[in-house]
Image (cartoon, rainbow, N blue to C red; front, top):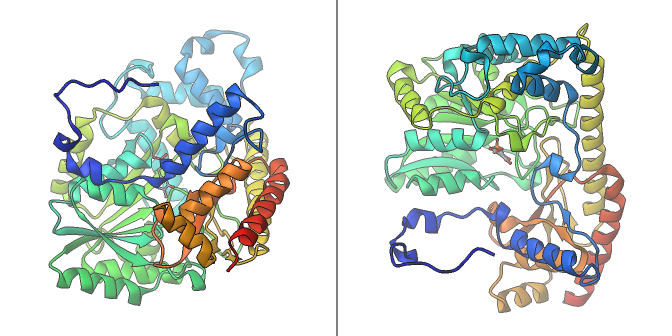
Length: 487
Ligand SMILES: Cc1ncc(COP(=O)(O)O)c(C=O)c1O
């Protein structure tokens, strides 16, 4: 345990109040309880009614057994230890295209080493490869000067908030429910979080009338709204936007002069055939809008998709319609951090430029990718049916991303019991679920929700063979909970 001794130099009331104000529920009270229970189980395996903790709280696929994609790891290994490229055995152990790709990448890195700093936007050759991937995805050109490689999407979001927010009078429109990186980052940078609500009854639909109302309300309070965050596919809500809806959003941002902040980190996680992913840049360009019409930032990450390489900390943002002067300021911000980590940069270029038909790795790569994505789709369906079978629970289908966000109609007695403990009712439910089953979910209150409704977020990531047991424990717990607290 960390020591609790402190000299007088730092006191809680003398640190940055924005840090005190900021919240990040995904790693909040329930996760702390889970860690404590895990410690109990380590010491005494029979100390609780379950023998393991089932982490359904964080979108961290490899921590739950998902295997990395072989091609990506081969290239990374060779780039990290180029001496392997000189050994005869390497040809037998690594595929020809991973060896070729490692040579290409090393040739692009000044000094041919992953141990050196790079350009602050990231290695140019890797940005070129990312642009090739974006162009293949969208059918529209991409410029390596618009790409900023980052240690995952989170630092990119912070960087943009730092650029846009001057004071509490600057606001950013964000969805409710939202991924709390946005509320945390806006708070840390001293701005105002301007909520707009997704319509749960319409499959977490995003209505332009709702955006208009919220924008006008914020403006009437003197808030200068600078940007609109859209998470597509959604976290925690799992919906995928229809292209027509995306066009309306683009038009709204253009008309209202808002920067469109498109969180597209789940672009590869799509589980339904009728909702393909369209990047906002492609949608805007297809509408005939260029850089002069709309300012757009697209965030992407190696943490999600079928790759799930959260720990490698890689990602990029593509920044268009900002103009040279602003981009220079953004470059200055990036250069304060010197550069993002080089393995994350390499991985980002691989994810955006994966093996093609005819490459030696292609078959293995496609098999691994398809197995992960089809299993995730099955897990999402099983959990959707399971949640909807529970008394008082309704759950929209997960069209994409990695989460279910069921709504629970909690009995009054449960709400009273929660209030008696000074706890939000959905946090109370999540705590009871954890204490009874070892299953960790995140209470909906951490993401925001319509007042008086209660939710929790559950990932679809536990191993597929564990899902039936999880469902059975969940059902058993829920029935007992509802019996205990029925009105
Ligand atoms: C919607 C969304 N955006 C951004 C992130 C940040 O991910 P990372 O910093 O690992 O790229 C996450 C992580 O869960 C997320 O769900």
